[in-house]
Image (cartoon, rainbow, N blue to C red; front, side, top):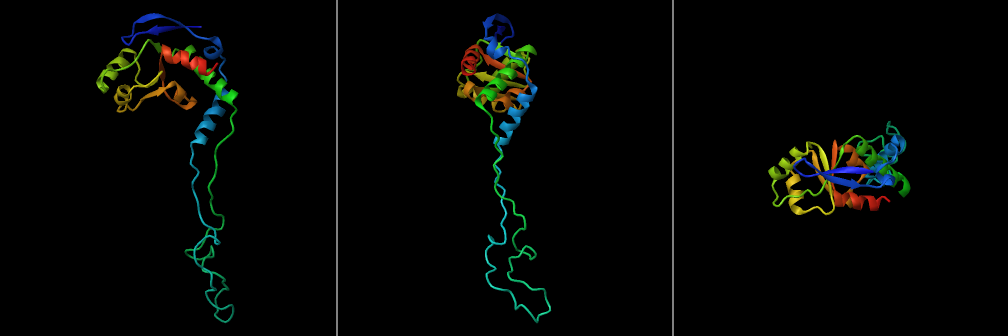
Length: 205
C-alpha cells in the first residue's frame, strides 16, 4: 500500500510504501469497540469506599440498657440506623479493568489505522517540528495541512513541539510508543511522520 507524503506546506513530495498487513486490514467495529471500552475502563481508579458498622470507629459500648427505657433496643451507636453509623451495603474499591489479549489489541490498532487511510484521515509528512516553542509556528504548519483537530505522531517528540502544542486544545503530540486506540479515534486527523509510520509498522507487525 502506498501513501502520499506531503510537506508541511501542503505539497505532495513522494510516495511511502506501507505493509498491507498493518494498514490494509478490514474494519472490525465490534473489536474496536471492545478494545476502546476496555482501555477506558482500565483508566478508572475505582477508589470509592465506605465503611460498614464494623469499620466505623466507636460503638463498642451498649448505648443504654436493654429494657425499661421505652426505646427500641440498640447494641451500638454505629448501627446503620443511627446518625454517624456505618453503611448497610458499603461501597468498596473496585477493579474495572477488562482482559484484552495482545493480539486483539494489535489487530484493533491495525484496523483503526487502515480505516484512517481509507477515509483519508491519515496524513503522512516527511517531518514535523518547530525550532522554538512557538504555538503560532505550529499553528501555521497545521493550517497548511488543513488540520484543526489532529493527533501528531512523531518518532521522538521534542520539547519545542510539545510546548508549542500545549495551548492548542484539539492538538495532541505523542511518540510511537504512546499511540493508543482512544487517541486514534478521538481526533479528526492523524498526522504522522514517515519515520513514525515505519516504526509503528514494526511495532504492529
